[in-house]
Length: 297
Image 1 (cartoon, rainbow, N blue to C red):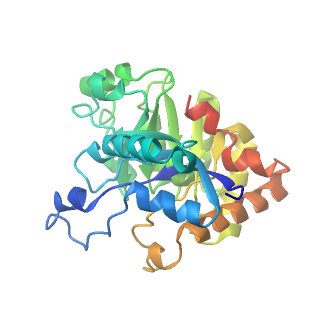
Image 2: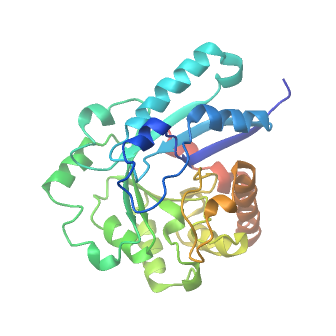
């Protein structure tokens, strides 16, 4: 076997037809195609890519994260059957950040590294002062281990900021999609700058790619990534992620799935990292995956 190009994927979704069957007819749009772990791994390996670390992130259309736990069992079986092909892969998971679902037992699983709050396009004013800081949420935060994080996804920078301010400062936080899905406002948007300043002050907040939900222009995304590096720090960014299977569409209505597949999304991430490195002089590998060991240990 020829040497494989090593990759990590800090944000991907694995789910099967059975998972989708649970929500069939309940959503106002067409369901995505199944995206099982085995097919994903084989697609990478067969094109010369060797995945080394993968984070299976809670998928917002599913009512729970049982698919995340199922993927752990799936990989275990693959590794037992073909250790040479699959043996060097580490798989982690980020489950649904719901106080009733993220129980002590689920969070205690050794491969669970965090829990995800999904707000999509929720406006800032929808985040009331106690929405993520009442007694039930305080209990959830207390159940997190020191190495685990809260993963926040909101398209608005100010929405991310309002959520961040309600999470205890002792808890690690990852902000999804570089903190903004509105590239037209630029990285100097006051709410975005306030988010970065708060992240810098806390010292335990990371920003994660791949960035195409910020913009499908690598040049535009690099401006946001460079701002993160300058204000929050070069050790607080993690660009190497696929967000496969590229569900949804950009602000122009063009489906992401028509613009990205696994090879193209990693090419996009590389382009973002190269331009960010040029702007900041931070080494390429550090921008792509330098924070991975901090967040998966």
